[in-house]
Structure formats: C-alpha cells, structure tokens
Length: 539
Image (tube, rainbow, N blue to C red; front, side):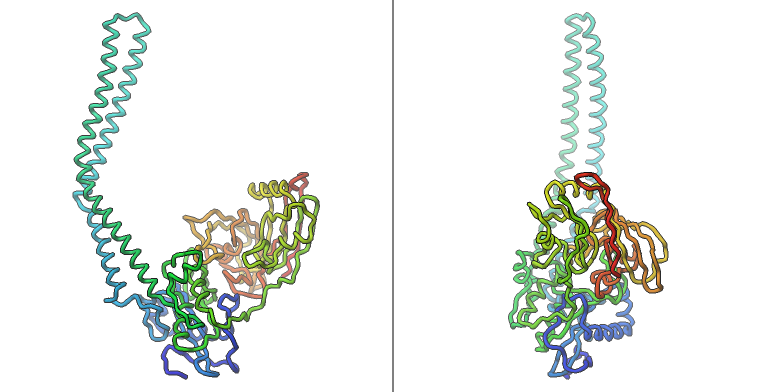
C-alpha cells in the first residue's frame, strides 16, 4: 500500500471487481457504501468539521485499486470546507484558487475594491442630496401641473357655458386670451421646472457615469477572471487525454461552464486517482447534515453526480475506462396492459420502469407500444404522463380531436387522478393538503426544487390508508401536475418528510418506486359519458 496520506485502506472480499461502476447508477456499489460509512465516522470525530457538515454538505468516495489486489478509498467534499480546500484527509482540488497571492485571489480583491468604490459613490452624501432634491422638484412640478390643468379645465367649462349665451366680440376675445394665457403659463412653468432640474441632473449624471463605468469594468474583469479560472481546470481521462472546462462544455451544445464546475466531489476524486495511476473501481456521492430549503437532500442518502456541472466533465473523464453497470436494469420487457379502448381513446396500465413517451435514448415506451397495438390513422397521442418509475393508469388519444378535448379537460383540472404511495416512516396526521411551489433544478434535471418565489403552484391532498410502524400507505390526489410533484411533496421536510419507498432521486433506491396511479376519472371527450377506471397497487 502506498504511503499517500489521502489513500485510506478498505478491505474487500476477494479481488476488486473488473471495470468501473457507472457513477450514474441508481444504487451505489457496496464498496462505496462501506467507504462512505468510514468517511462519516471520521468526519463525526472531527469537532470543527462536524459542526460545518451538520449545516449540509455533499461528500464523495472513490474506491480504487492502488496496487494489484489492494483496495482503498479516496474522500472529497464539494467546494470548500471551512473556507479551505487543503484538508490532508481529502483529495486536493483540481485547481487551487485559494492561494492568497495567486492570480485568482489577487484579481478577486481588485474586483472587491471596485465594488467598494461603487458603493461609496452610490452612498455619497452629495449624490444622495442631489437625488432627493431632484425627486422633490419633480414632485413639485407634477403637483403644480396637475393643479394648473385642473384650473384650465374649470375655466374652459366656464367659457363654454358663456359661449352658449349671447356674447360680444370683446367678451369672446377676452375668453380666447384667457385660454392662450393659461396654456402659455403651463409651458412657461414646465420650462422653468426643466431648467431647475437640468443643473441637478448634470451633477448627478457625473456620479452615475462613474458608477456605470465601474460596473462595466467589474463585469469585464469578472468575466475574464471566470474564463481564466475555467482554463486552469485541465481534466484528464482514461485515454490519457487532457482538456480544460471550456473545451469540455463547448462540446455540449456550445455551453459555458457553470459556476463551481470542477469543484464537485466526482471530478476531484477521479482526477486525483488518474494522476496517481490508480485504477478507479467505484464512485459515490452522499449528503450529510441539514437539507437546503429548496434543493431536497437527506442526510446519509446517496445521489448521482449532477447533470449540469458534473455530467459533461465525467463524460470526458470516463473515456477510455471500462464503465459497467452493477445496478439492476429497468424491466423493459414488461408490457403495458390495455384496460379500455374505443375509437377515440385508450386507457392503459403502465408498468414501473417503462417511460410514458420516447426519450433521447430511443428506449421502449408506452407510446411506441400503443402505436403497434392500436389501430389509429394519425398515431397515438399521449395526453398525460407518468414518471418512468411510476406505475398505473394512463389515458391516450387516438386522433387530433380527442387529443384536443382531453387536453382541455386536464387544463381545466376536470380529470380526477388518485395515487397510492408507500412512504418511509410514519405519517402521523391522518389527512391534509400540501402546498409547496416547485420549479426544475436547471443544473440537475430532472430533479425539482421547492421555491416559494420562482416556483409554480403545486397542491396535493393526502390521506393515510395504513401504518405498519416502518412505512405508511397513502392516498394522494394532486390538484396540479408538476413534474415529480408527489415525490417532492412526500419527501420534503416542509411536506410529509417521508420519501416514497424506492425513490432514487429524493429517497432511498429499492427494487421499484412505490407510487401507483390507481384511479382515473373523466368525461369521455366525444360523448360526455363519465368514465372511472381503477387499478390496485402492486405493492
């Protein structure tokens, strides 16, 4: 065993497995589970580290074969820990941007100086005084103008009444002069206000021009610094090739690297192992501590590397490596079952593990299966969907008109959908309503976030059907159709705080997701007949 202090012995039963376990598998490799337990035990024994980790942090382990037949693990944390990235127990960063006299920190201080200068100019007493004087003068002008226009309207009404009577030419001319005077007075006063405001605006603009110039300078230096930083992250792969983050992300539809790219656990771990010449065996990331308010993470749970920051990097780094899946495959051999069909619609029971519609990977789907098994002129049109891992009832249209009318029913929320879920733990309140607005996580699709500001309304009714001490069976009725709504509402601490059993994204992976669409009720789109379909949950 090498003397590298970052390499921690890990006994394995027999020889390490061949190949590298796919880091995007649902289930972590058993060797990673063992390594994660050891890392948690170590972290809990470090008092200052344990305090920060309790606030929430992603940790990672990489099991490696450091010598023939010798297994060990490496540890990493995302970003910084205690403002540091040089803890000797963990692998170092791909690039150390925290050196006090390095280019990044030096330029960061320059940008901070610009920020402070902007703040001083914005809060300059003379600028604030000018801004207040201008605002007061504009208010004075608006008030005077409003009063004068009111007087003009009253005078005009009076003149109109007088003109209805018999008036002399002299009286008519006097009324015309009055109108001309009042209009001229309005223009004179407006010009006078403009002149009084002009000098204030000129002096105020000098401050604002300086602020704008500094903001532009700040933006340019920040962009240049970010570009320089990403060029320092030179990643290696299993072929012995090297590429920086600009090159790696540009291949993904010309994307720009997101902030923090390269500082997650997975790239750090693989980079260190490949540079040392050790064979990667399996990698896993897991969350410790408190969950963020929006991004749903649970203490001790394993999570696949994020798709936004990590997947493009890992796609490059894994080239040349023998990547293998050790998790059970989705049961694509299971076929849907048609429970009702007529000339307009078809209702089908979808098995867990089968996508509702075709994806980018050309996998089997309910839609493709129905196209082969139903006689339609234009092809099957899925009107609503279930997550791939959710089983249960789906309705599809067999022509354009049925599709249009069914979609209108869903949009008006006139389709009743009921689900059965088996969740981890005990839900103590018998029934209630969950209201947690949701939005997608742009850096880790398809995961969803709870966001009270930018999220869309998401409402779910729940009712406890049965408790057995370790799990709770629920009846769920969503009033909205957000992606992963039921899964997030069950798992989130502000929801039921009880993940659905087998949830690979928000809970603990198992043989299947225990969520089943058990009831579907709606009016037939063509004849208006009320239709109800029920299907018992298979768990």
